[in-house]
Image (tube, rainbow over all chains, first blue to last red; front, side, top):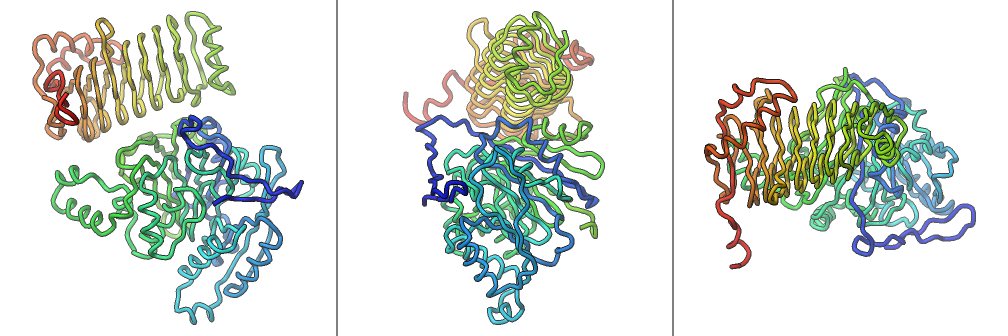
Length: 381
Length: 239
């Protein structure tokens, strides 16, 4: 699918999908991820997470940067916060009409941005705080989350030129085409306070660098930033499409957000179990484990074989009240963890952690497939 | 000569190192890649966190890091020394062809992957603590020594060590009963020749980081070498 955005100044449609593919041009794979979380639920501005991407500048190539922030909308914490890209005013009107069928729009506004030369071809970027109508939920016999997930899927799949890139409560993702440190300035992230930030610098290798394809990928409270590429993408995509998800954003990482939603929200798996599905150990490794653990892992591999992610990845999954970092089972991408007081830091490189906290302690690298789960203390978010 | 690395990108930093002459000290290093890449005959001491591919293609000289190093330390290095007074990330000594890497702490995944040797080019990696999975993967030559001085109770190597090894040797000090080796390699106690080979490595590690070399030489040591000159000849084709 080709992707078009209207260029604001010249009102000329510009084809974004112009990248040469790997093979036509040599692309050393890169990408950078970074995160900070306060276990005490203290809200931090976006300055440090943006700075953390600077020493990893060369891991990106300017074709995508983004951030997820948790705890940023406390005054609207009961409403679903939709962040949406529109290619035109008409698309926005159409989308709003669709939203009004099922939601009370509590607030609708432009997401504040800064005018900087590094970010160009800016679409319309809007934010809505939404309350699903009980009458609609009753008629459809759906809970609010399922309804929201379906509406997001519907807009992204059917409404050409509109992309919902964030739809959780009291959280939001911010992404663009550009280097992550520029994207952070563009979205004025220093004006937000979050108890958890994740970040991504993109170096697209197989798919176009466009606004919707930047990370994080997000549905409801889940957001994923990812360094790597998913060899099993099509198997994973076909599997989640059986359950109503649709992959529309032309980047493999998108499917991970839907896998997280499917396993955690709809199947009710724990984070540990989800990690064991996504980065299942080899059968030859399971064979030598204690019987109880071997049985658990065998069960998960057999029940969810199509949700195993192969290929290199390091990811950070954000959710309300915590995060989980995970490497592929072969650990083909780097990831380092550090701590200081109530904060935990996770990055592709230790240098990024040292930017956020020069005195970070307990620096360590988790094993492939070993999830790092950080949760806030009860009642702090 | 002192070089303040803050605000310098990797290119500018390497130019400053070249301009500094035979020796320099870098302070405030934070993620600059390729430090000392392809250089020879220089002593460089680094405070802070050097970026990936520290000493890539190093031809000679001496790089010291007072702290941790990131991924791909000594990538394809040909000669010289890299000393890390901390831990190293993944793929330390990737395709290393000569010289030595001494690590005080632990190594990440795939240390010594594709390491090779030829005549007097005999690369060496010595790791004070433990190593991650795929240690010595596809090793074709040289020596990797893991001293196992870490204290977190984990095995000295993760999963799949020496997978695809067809030359050189990986030597462990301490208990290796928790480590599973592939069928194509043979763990064995060191021969006299192998003991003579590892002794100077232990002594050098102790000289750099402290420790009692004689006590460490008590071992026990386990040497892992490939079964034959061509252990994989039947795997893909009868060649």
